[in-house]
Image (cartoon, rainbow, N blue to C red; front, side):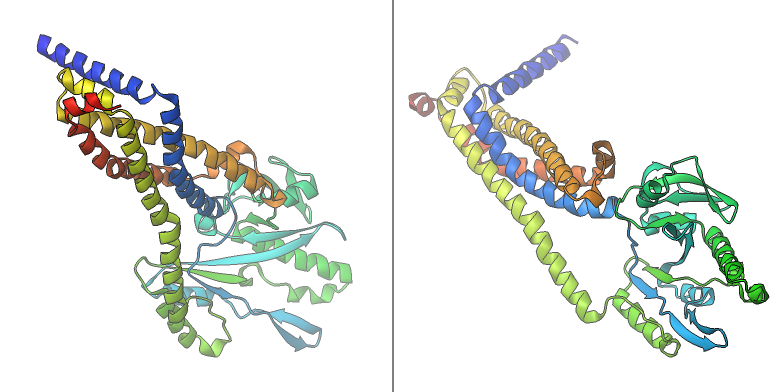
Length: 406
């Protein structure tokens, strides 16, 4: 038992010595932290900049899109728009076992008066992650209730907030959430609600025109068609080939199938590869070289100190471990410094654009922990690769020669 406590005491003394040694000389600490922080800053800056676009702003994460091409049909009442997208079409596309998900979005608008209107986007609640809708407050709607997630813009324009109600032809819908993106123009509710509001809007328009006889022309709730169809393919499948197949299959239905073709896919792959090299590998290489140069200089500055340690009985293995651990400590500290700087700078850059401005805590919530964990892993690799040569050099120093060093 006494041997166990003796071993713990030696380890604690060793750790205490290394920690004090790492921060003893201020000038060395400053240039070490600065040098190691620069590549870490670059890695985090580019990673977070890309991460913000995915985690904060509204968009659809589809591989293939089929937009509605509104055409005009001339009848006795004049021109009326028809859409060539149907729910039956969605069902046909779902039969392809290469496709993971098919989502239809439904749009309608409601005018409260001549100046104020609201654009509603209808999606099913299970497709919220697919549509990437982010909230500044509240929660997402329930498909089976008359609930709405109001856009930030509509919340200000209507002077409405969570818990209040919007009236659509005397039918009350509760506001349960507010979106994050200030430039977003769409509010969101369930497909079922959009179809009901669309039917009410048609009825109100007919009543305003005094043309009650044409009430039969109101679009039934279940016949409203999607504005866009979004397609997510299964992992490992060829999006460009599926796009080509869909174009061939529905060539007679005047559909626009928007997705990658072979040429664009190759171009995008090359572009992504170049971007990865520039923004990931080059900063890592710079980080390894800077860590190597800085730690070599540190060992050179401490040649006499290392000679003293060896003369009092320190083994080469212990010297090697000391340099390695010191590099780890300084690299981890550099990571935290770089992380704080990146967060503050990217937050200020983000808020320079009024439509994108958010509170600091909301901004922190939009950041991905995975991004920082990945960067932290890179920092540890940099610390190992950048410190091995300096650690070997320090461990091989001759005590006699080191003590003579000036």
